[in-house]
Amino acid sequence: TCLIVGKSTSVNRSTDISILYSIAMAHYNSVTIADPSKTTLPQFLMQLEQSEMVISVDTSAIHIREGLGLPAFGIYGAFTTDSRTKYYRYTKSIDIKFSSCIIMPCFLHKEKCIHFDVETESAGCISSMNNTFREQVEKGFNEYLKELGK
Image (tube, rainbow, N blue to C red):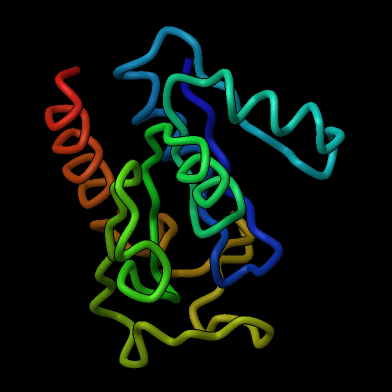
């Protein structure tokens, strides 16, 4: 199974879950979208531990999976992989490029992204507003699966 965590406490680190879902479905028979706000912490931790793979934006899911020694795929737009997962052994993270944003990476946490996507409630760099977002995620995820021998 694959668990997707696409929403963060910050809209600048939240993404369009539908894109991640379709990418995961190409590789896994069972894909679950996590919503930590609708589950208890023990339930969320169990989901993280029992999933074969986790695809996530910059959330606790990435860091917990790393601590468990389990594979995760991280997606970064507002922050960089170097600032968040540089030394992680079990996590493959990618920096999303967005040519429409001149301040990327913005490292914004509380202020709303200047390219905020109202429809998907996500940052422009990691949403369908970025016309290469899907391609960048697919490429990075496929490379990671190959590294894992899958």
